[in-house]
Image (tube, rainbow, N blue to C red; front, side):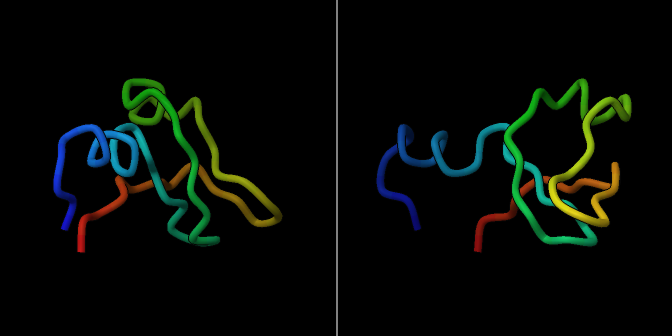
Length: 54
């Protein structure tokens, strides 16, 4: 677990994960929601989810 808010923001704020390739990308949530952002790599999709805390 993260001990202070700065580290929490650095690790999780505006970070999304491609559901197919499992690669991370940092993007504006409004652009992700509108479908303007796609994942990285071969086989990347526009189907992204927010990065979860474990």
